Image (cartoon, rainbow, N blue to C red; front, top):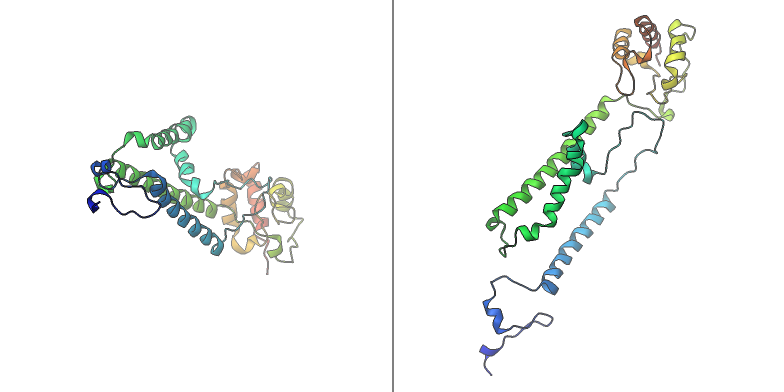
Length: 253
């Protein structure tokens, strides 16, 4: 029997048959050839991801504090692009960004094998599928980046809390009989603490070292929406000035 009637094969691979001569070049059985390649690539990504986590551990955030009204919740990083998408559909049309668009994208991904059943594998020979995937990937990367940047800018604009352990030992209030101190005790201490160590609002120890009276008046007047309303809930401009004048005296050495 000559070599024209059979081919040597590697153990574990499908036997060659005469009808296989008519199959397009590049076809291969799904099992085990194609599936084995998928398993190998998936395993490599999984091992690489595990090594990345081992050498770059993810730090846990602070313990949840229900009384902290300044906390801005954020999803895990791999959902940032969906979180960012919601910002483009505010108010009554939020359902478009939360249900409709993600639903359409998921449906297209599921039925992709029926929409594009070409046997050609080279990306350049499948322009529609390649372009759609690249555009989708770039949009996801861009929206993930935008969500991260905007969240960082938001955190930077918020009053910074400080650990009690890092505060100066001397927290004696200056001129506690001042009218501004009495207004502060009744209207502001609920958020900033009677001893200025903060609670819901940020600490104010040593605030006089950072801001003068004029700056404090401006800050209190504008407030920090939504956590602190304009004028900080004070009833009049005179109260704002009295509190600002007293706070400007609270200095630490």
